[in-house]
Length: 321
Image (cartoon, rainbow, N blue to C red; front, side):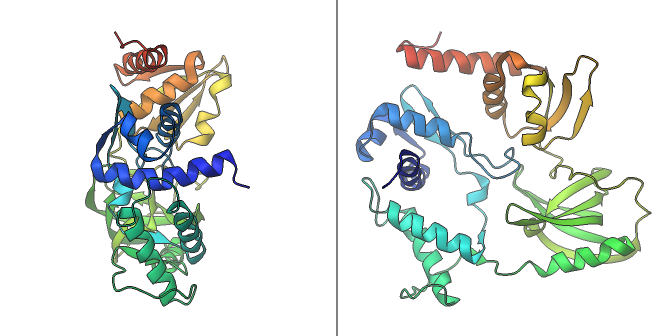
């Protein structure tokens, strides 16, 4: 028996690629294509707008409804080669094939093409027995951890310095940095290296699969002046927000990656955290309500108020003022 949550997930698997291919679609057309009510589609869009990849700041699904039109951008995470473990690839293939049986599924659309590539790659490594196609470009299956993991892990003890070329999804650019690895760890299916970074002058966490190249410089960094207790956020070019969190909102400092946390005498926290966009910050402030105060950037409170007015007007059936 399919649960309501499973039905929504399958519908989204079909809906999102279709929307991304078109950019903007009237809400009524989306509901008609996927055999759902306008209210159901609105709830789906609200849900997916809060989805992304950890740490949920630089790789969010940018989708919203404005004046009865669903607008969506293509997240940068979909413009890079997809990296999956074999179990992840098999799970996605199974879910995707089930979703292709739903109303609105396009047998010649992007989801079908993506599933064909995943199936071909899984066939090549003997996971499934489907007949393979010819094109597996853009998919890399990581059955074992990247070789660079062992290189960085060995460098931690000696403090060896590396010159790396690193891709930043926040700016869609690559930068060359000199780093000294301090700690290597895995989280959420990805490998990370915590390193002293010459570009920011601070300790940063880099996702290893975003490192295009790593070359030892032959130099060694100084002995670390602080233990590695929690990973610092990577991609320091992402804009930051400063929030004052009352006790009921302290969960934000644990759920999201933060640069710093200051405990105040009244028990509240001042946190500095990366934000993917002003829209993302507005949604977070709206969710926190009176339990949070935005200290920076300027205009964030007005943005949250405007978003609240838009949502209220949509549900009231009147235009936002």
